[in-house]
Length: 448
Image 1 (cartoon, helix red, strand yellow):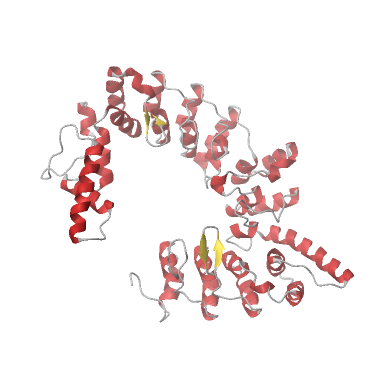
Image 2 (cartoon, rainbow, N blue to C red; image 1 turned 90 degrees about the vertical axis):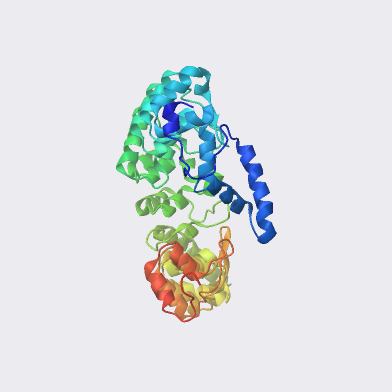
């Protein structure tokens, strides 16, 4: 280890037991297993993590993670990884002068290159040093199949993105696991701010092209029109499985882009399309305003069905989205007709849940008045929840209050996090709803 890298290594408590000069992680893992056996003699429920923490503290570290980081730093690759992350160019130079082939070293489960690490953390000096020593700017890591440029763009490190491009980096980056390309990494994860827009503008200046998702993310109406005009099938494109195979319309609703939602509907996006889990556009909405154009489009289809039913003197064939859309646009007459033709429609699984998540107090009240269960359980992607859980998730205290008044049980737990209403409200920091819940006698206080 060089003096410089030693100065930046984690420092254990001086009074703690000393590690061997060259400890290995395997050696420490064996120690932790032995410690676990000792702990279980008096604590049968002890876990491996308890034993690991004991071992770490014995050597003066606050956690197993901190101890592991120290062990990693004692290796050549560990020094290079730490230096790339922190931008410690002196250590990079010293180690790579002695081990020049290590410029191609990879780290971690997904085998990131040193350049990935330096780019992700915006360490321009380290990026320069690695490039000058022959690091491959277009190497891909093995997790998301990305270039270093993807990560620099996602973190809005424009100077690093420019340096990588100047060194021959591919500004398009097709083939990453999220299928977003570099421009998508710079724009599609709630990155509608000046630094990320600057990265996008630079990428475009070097030849990258907007796609439907980057245009939506940045609220670029003219760009979205051009993308769809050039390729109408863009409206039916999908995000990757990592994002539940969302459609552009679902993506626009999820990212609260009401102008883009309206434009997508105008351009012909399918309002009934579902994601890879079978969830409709409405499942992504946390605001009655955001997906209103979608509800209007669905309602037009509903009215056509009601008209057909009238001509044929039959019951209207309504479903979940028909009743939701009729309520959302305040067509109470059609909503009543659908409920008469199918007495169970108001209590369709998910109906009151999605109205609660949208923050539609009138809609929730109508559904409850027509037989919906305030305590109904419904699978919201990978967790079974109540309407109250979703009102809390989207921060709609008026809906939460109505649900509680109509018999919602705040003690019901979801199936993924095993948490009741107060747990959700505290986790998401919904202060008004926390106060509302704590004012009730049937809600235990924090930590109860």
